[in-house]
Amino acid sequence: MEFKRIVLTLITGLLLCLSIRAVKAQAKTPKFKVIAFYTAKNDHAHISYVHEANKWFPRMALKYNFSYDSTSNWSNMNAEFLSNYQVVLFLDTRPEEPIQRAAFEKYMETGGGWIGFHFAAFALTPSDFPQNWDWYHHHFLGSGSYGSNTWRPTSAILRVENRKHPVTSRLPETFKAAANEWYRWSEDLRTNPDIRILLSVDSSSFPLGTGPKQSEIWHSGYYPVAWTNIKYRMVYINMGHNDMDYENHTIKDLSSSFSSETQNEFLLRSLFFAAKKKF
Image (cartoon, rainbow, N blue to C red):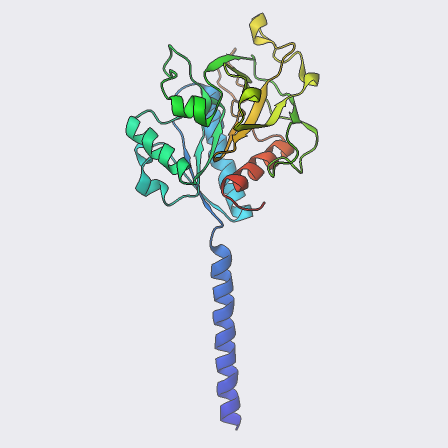
């Protein structure tokens, strides 16, 4: 009887150890996988943001149990590679090759998640990034071409425009964003039935920008800075341009795009929304 009791105790202990290991293994399985594409070759402010993002997102991945990878190799924009991830990020640019664009379009059309930051929506003809991708700029983003921007990068008070959306439902009515260069677009997003504007510049921010050009200072108007297209699992976020010490040519960071706690919460909620997960 004593021998049987010992054996039973050993078996129970072994089963308990196996159960604990199984629970731990399950806990380590990421809720979803994120791949961030970037170029980080032009504009020191955009490069600064990419470097910040590639430090901040891995920390959040550890905290909230998702995985985060990043790559500057846009050739990875193909069906086989993308099939490993539930969310794609464009940190600073967009794919340029037709085969890459076709792969991304199919990824989104078949239920993939996406978040684009700041320059990822830029398009201006003529420039190094012309408006030569109608699906992306007109149908997917709905913003069309770049119109103008504020200067220099400054913080703004942002207003939540859609309190029913899961990304913004728990945010305060207004909050202070991190310093940024704010963009204006050629298309009025309010007229697009597929677009849901999430955040816009609050009127208390005006005048926004310091110049020196008067056109770089906004005194009035309506400026969406984050929105989603209801046909896709996506969020575009205009933030992603740090303030830099251009004047003294030190290229020193003067701000951080992750300095606003509420803005960071918005980023995380956007990420979980794109992944079809509850935050």
